[in-house]
Image (cartoon, rainbow, N blue to C red; front, side):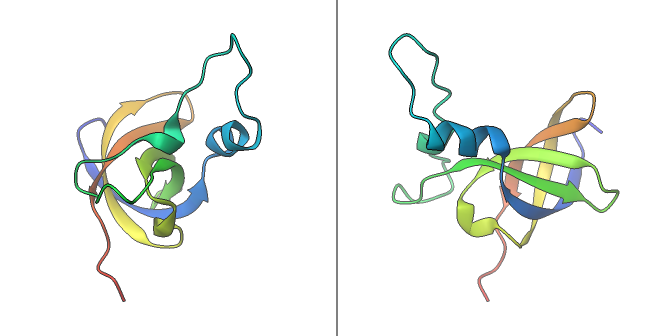
Length: 97
């Protein structure tokens, strides 16, 4: 699967990223900073976070993107695979309706 581009239905923000937002880091802890990333093909005003979606084969795929993609179909290039989760990068954004 690594290197392939797959169509993904975006379900929303990952549980890990939403937990990071709910509990700000305390001194001495590691902060992943998913919510402050900027992707080059988005404007500087669009914050991104780690999103979760499912492929047509019902595989879970995590990637970085804006929360506004929730409920949309997007193309993701798979960059890594773990036991039950694929990881990838956003190839294109959907056409606004």
